[in-house]
Image (cartoon, rainbow, N blue to C red):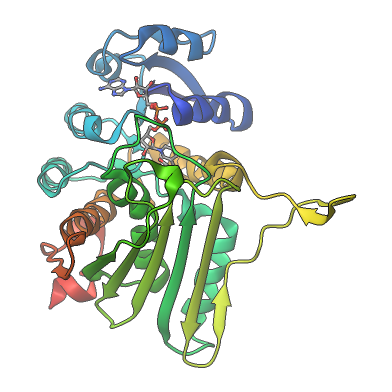
Amino acid sequence: MSLKVGIIGTGMIGQDHIRRLTKVLSGVEVVGVTDIDQARAAAAAPEVAEVFATPTALISSEKVQAVVICSWGPAHEEQLLTCIAAGKPVFCEKPLVTSEAAALRVMEAEVAFGRRLVQVGFMRRFDADYRRLKAVIDSGRLGAPLLFHSVHRNASVPEGLYTSEMPLNDTLVHDADIARWLLSDEVTGVEVRVPRRSSRGGELRDPIFVLLHMASGVLVDVEISVNIAYGYDIRGEVSCETGVAALPNRPATLISDSNGIRQAIPEDWRERFIEAYDQEFREWLVAAAAGTATGPSTWDGYAATLVADAALRAVSGGFESINLIAKPSLYGPPTAMAAE
Ligand SMILES: NC(=O)c1ccc[n+]([C@@H]2O[C@H](COP(=O)([O-])OP(=O)(O)OC[C@H]3O[C@@H](n4cnc5c(N)ncnc54)[C@H](O)[C@@H]3O)[C@@H](O)[C@H]2O)c1
Ligand SMILES: O[C@H]1[C@H](O)[C@@H](O)[C@H](O)[C@@H](O)[C@H]1O
């Protein structure tokens, strides 16, 4: 039997996830869509799907068994709380929410419900290259990790929609989450440096350099560049005591012509992480069909939100510390930092 899913937000990633759920994956049916732009929702809706007037109407419909949230970050809180109140499993695109207070409200509601319902869209955790990198670190054969270099480059970002806070509260959250996950660690403090501004980014602080201090003492440097022009370039390298482990360059067809020999670079996140998104939804569908959620949790979304908040405060210079609440047992054993 197929899981009946409703989609909130039918913009770039909403449309890509509709394609994935209707054309790539099995065991799922998209039965409803909604967007504040009703014409966009209608254009994106698969033939069998109903276009709902509001997120609340979609979430409360008996037709919809589980929900996928692909609206803008600031809209996520209300939609998540409505899903939790309805007891429906929900996949929420990152960022979970855009403030600490909102993250705590969502966590409180899910803990009170008593069962995990929320999976956050940190798709890098489902990427085969990142999974292999983590297996090497976890095996311990290179000794303890000491430094992690994370490079996050976007060719461009949507003009007007991508605001000055977003390098830190929309883009950096991926690097914060992957650092926590790869290193099985928590971020305890953040520093930010703003170098010479790219002339391509208008008023945006771009690029931006972030240093994450982990509870173990590992340092993570992150380059965020969101107007790099040449493609979507994601790199990661972990220096350990007796060796270095890095993400591979993605295999792509080698083109030889009068310009030389070259390999194509992915254009954007859709291309770079296409298999990771497929896998994240495969795993979500299994858990959602059982009425729950696995993978990146509300706790992980909360931790990444605190990093974003601290980074926004650290823009003016200095070190900003992060203080997580004690981890509710719903999200697993206490982390190093929460236990201190
Ligand atoms: N995991 C990833 O790699 C990844 C990639 C892209 C986007 N995202 C995330 O997905 C979300 C959407 O991003 P996008 O690039 O598709 O943006 P987008 O602007 O293309 O689409 C967002 C859509 O949501 C709709 N919307 C906004 N608020 C709404 C509300 N309150 N109710 C109903 N509809 C609403 C908008 O009208 C728009 O159609 C963001 O949170 C973004 O950070 C994640
Ligand atoms: O919403 C997108 C998405 O999360 C991408 O994966 C990231 O690279 C972009 O910077 C961000 O704006």
